[in-house]
Image (cartoon, rainbow, N blue to C red; front, side):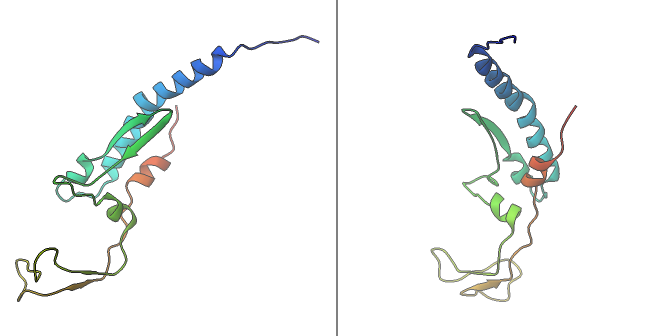
Length: 125
């Protein structure tokens, strides 16, 4: 019976090829699809979508905008009903409100997935 011997070099070569595929093709493709599927208001959420490698792992993420705001998860997953209270002030007020209020009972928001559909998009050549 024939004997085939494989040295350990192939594992390193496969790891390098996979990392290159993730960084150069899969990451950009998922990022572009997520931006395309992203609901658009100001464009800040789509602009926050990025990809990078952490060791052998491809990370595709979104934050949501400038000024340290991180709302991407709320858009992706939606929110349940919740109470909004002022942060550092005594009342809430917005243009069009009849008067300042102490709290608002928000009904929640529906999910608008953009990252998961991009990740689950069938790809192939």
